Length: 138
Image 1 (cartoon, rainbow, N blue to C red):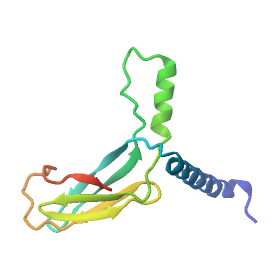
Image 2 (tube, one colour):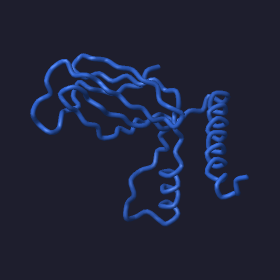
Image 3 (tube, helix red, strand yellow):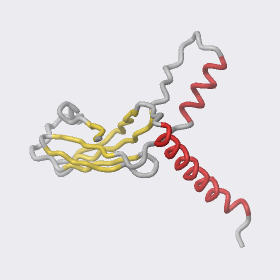
Image 4 (tube, rainbow, N blue to C red):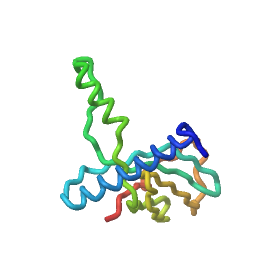
């Protein structure tokens, strides 16, 4: 039999999933939805593939900290940064060199793409993201 310490991570995970499910249902019922924000993660590319990803979250609307912020405002903003409302099941489309790919976010709002370039990437270590937008699909 497992002791409570070994069962705690599973309990926390199930509680998080239940909380996410309840919030999602309430948003559907009430029609109250925050705007979405796409958090892109640094990707990489080789001659054979371009790999990148990110996460879709509800935009909590916090502003960067300023020196004039009071302690209470900083605490609220810190909470907003830690407590995220992920968007599971969102369809995302990415386009690069005319190739389009679509994926669906997982239960925590994460997505990842692998696109095979049709043209050689230039020799610079960084590729411009021009013509490679990531767009939410309705």
